[in-house]
View 1 (cartoon, rainbow over the protein chains, first blue to last red):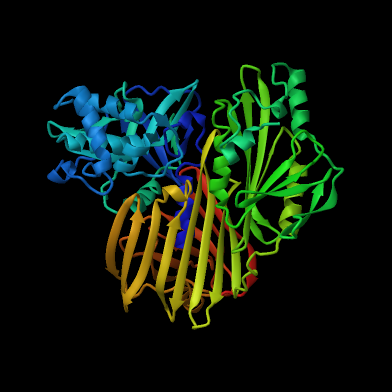
View 2: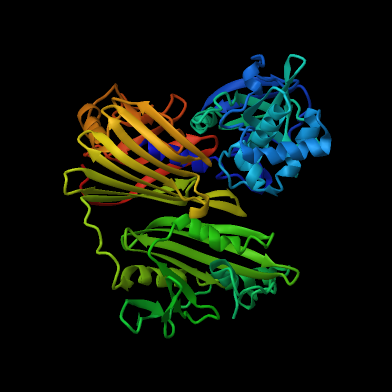
Length: 232
Length: 404
C-alpha cells in the first residue's frame, strides 16, 4: 500500500498545476474575495484540512536554526563534488571571478537551467548540471550546491509563494534557496533571479535530509502543505 | 503524406518544418469558426467493419475495425499496422515485444512540443481486453497559419508478450480511434510471442488525480517450481505538470519471495527511456535479516547494506492484515517497508490502522495518510489521499485469480 501511496504522491508533486505555475510545484488554492493586497504586513489563514491557522507576515521569516559547517559540505542532493557539477562551478568562476556574490550566483544558476519545464521530480545538483532543465526544485538545488561550492552556507527550503497574476491571487507550492550571511538566513530564488523574495515567500520546511533518502522526506514535507490559504 | 507522428516515431525522414496537411483545420477567431472547430473535433466515422489483416508468413494477424483495407508490414524490429478509418490519416499501430507505456506516449508528444500553443486535453488509463493501457490526447496550433492539429495516442501491453503504440494525427474521430485500438487489443496475435503467463493472480490498479486518470499499475504473482513466489510489478504514469507538458514514468520491480521474506529483487525506473535509467538496483538477501543493494540511483552508483529482520514480503503482510486488522477496531499494525524509489539505503515503516468506525487507514506519517478499502484477503482495492489541493485515488480495476 505504501508503494501505492508514494507513487501517487510523487506524481502529485507536479500534477494539477496550471500554466501560470510553470517552474513551481503543486498549486495551493487561494480563497480571497478579490485580488488580495500582498503588501506587508499580510494577514492570512492557512487551512490544514479544516484546521485554520492564522499567520501574519511582515517580512521573510526563515527557520531560525543557525548555519553550521554541514551547510557548506557536499551531500547526495547538493553534490557539488560530483565531476558532472564541475562545469557549473567553472562556468560561474570564469564569468564572475573567484568570489561571486550570492545574487550573482542566483542569476548564473537561472541561466544555467536553459530549459524551464516542470517534468522533473527532485533531481540532484549533478543531474541538473547535466540536464540544464527543471522547475523550482532544480533551480533551488543547483543554486544551493553552487553557493556551497564557493564556500557559502546554503540550504533548500520548500513552502508557498503568493503572487498576484493576471488580476488574481495565486499560491504555489514552491522551493527556493537560502544563504546564510551575517548570522541570518535570507532567501534567493533562481526561478525569479532578478527579483528579491519577500514576505510573500512562506518557508514551511527546510530540506534537512540531503542524503540518499531525501526524496522520502520531501514527500512527507509536501504532505504538511496547507490545502488552502484564506486571505481576507 | 508526412506527419508529425512520423517525426516522433521514426526520427528520420520527416525533416519538413511545414505544417502537417492533416492538421488543416481553420482556427481563426469568431463564433462560427469556434463552432466549426468543435464540430470538427466531434466528428466520428461510425461506418467501420471488422477486417482481417495478416503478415504473409502468418507471423502476425488481427481482425480490426476499419473503413478500408488494413495493412501490416515489418519495420526494423517492429510491425506497423495501418488502419484506415475514412480520414486523411490512418490509425498507425506499432507492435513491439516491449513498450514502456508512459515513455512511449512522451516520445510521441515530443513531436508536438515544438508548437508553443498546445494543450493536453484528455488522459485515460485502465484495462483493455486484459491489457493495461494509457491514453493521451493533445491539441496543437500551427502558426502563423493558425491550423489546428490533434494527436490521439494509446499504448497498451500484454504482459510478457507484446506492446503496442497506436496514434492518430488528425482532429476529431476520438471514439472511432478508440474502437480501432480496442479491436487491436482484442485480436492481435503474434505467432512467435511467448505463451501468456499463467500467474496465480494478476491485478491492475488505476491512479487518478483530481478525477483525471493518469496511471496504471500491474502486479503479477507466480508460483515458481522451486516453491518461491515471483512478484512482478509495473507502474506507468503520466505526470501532467501543466496543460502543455508531462513526463512519462515507467517503473518495474521483480521480487522473489521465499517463506515470509524477500530473497532478491530488481528495481528499474525506465522514465525517459532505457538510455537514461535513474534507478536500476539489485537487492539480495545475504543472510537472514540483512540485505545488500547495488546499482544506479539518481545517476550514482550505490553499494549499501542494511539490516531489516522484520521486513516481511507482501505475502506475509497480507496475512498479517487479515489476521490483525480486518474486522478489528482501534488497532494499529506497524509494517516495515522498502521503497527504493525514494530511499534505497534502508527500510521504513507504515502503519495500517483499523479505526473505531470500522474503516481503515494507511499512514506513512500522521500527516501523510490514506483511507484504504481492503478486500477479504487483506489486499487493498481502493485508496484515497489528499495532498495540498489534490485528491489522489488508486483503485483496482482488474483482479484475476486469488493472490496469496
